[in-house]
Image: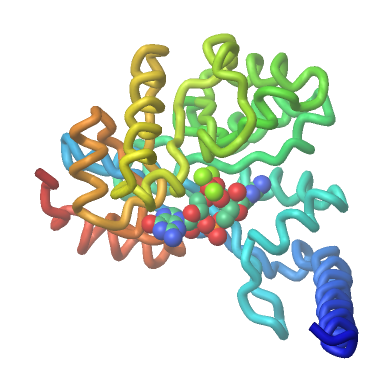
Length: 284
Ligand code: C2E
Ligand code: MG
Ligand code: MG
Ligand code: MG
């Protein structure tokens, strides 16, 4: 390896870092106006009960339509929103929108299911969060059992002080709490039973690699833990019949993934509900 190559590598690397930093700075600047400019929209992904072959819930996922860049993925802008604190007003807006939309589906389509919203750790910095949830529910007239919060293991286990108390207060209102991306974080299995959690979501890495024997053991174990702790469970990222069959054989029946439905806008979801939802074959 010549000295020259090393130098070139270094300069390419630093240029790349520069481009990324520039994009990040631009995204951060534009993110500050995105809510006001109405550039955010919410997509909904079905959660499917594969045992009874029916819709049992939805997850709300945020999308940002940047005027020049097009759709920016949440993987890119959520971390910026978290660092800047913008995530707090954004999430309040999402919660309100989701509760309103859920009420509309109840009234117009006679669909009564919980819809989940992803939470960032920063929501728990302000101890008034449980009160804000209560106010949003009261304002929209949505019964609490039709709202669910998705938290990560790090929020549940070593979130900032007062997080667990706030989660308990939210749970006591009747709002469901689910543990997202389970198995990828650093949660202590020993205290899982003390956490205010009703539902465990098996992360898609395990589902994706379901043909690996070692991943199969992990999924079986997660399902057994959820079952023994009396928690509900949802498998994320379900794309194939093989995955469904394996999950079912282990006792997990609630599925979320492209096999059943991608995240959809309200209009797309309405169409899906009318045309596709009752044609999904029973997996067996
Ligand atoms: P997540 O909460 O674990 O959401 C699941 C992600 O998996 C979504 O990506 C969804 O589109 C994707 N997905 C669902 N089914 C399949 C499948 O069958 N195959 C594959 N390959 N992917 C599937 P998305 O929408 O890009 O969101 C990524 C992450 O961004 C979310 O992961 C969540 O952590 C975060 N996020 C999204 N919306 C929000 C939000 O409103 N607030 C916060 N705080 N975070 C959000
Ligand atoms: Mg989620
Ligand atoms: Mg997840
Ligand atoms: Mg994830």
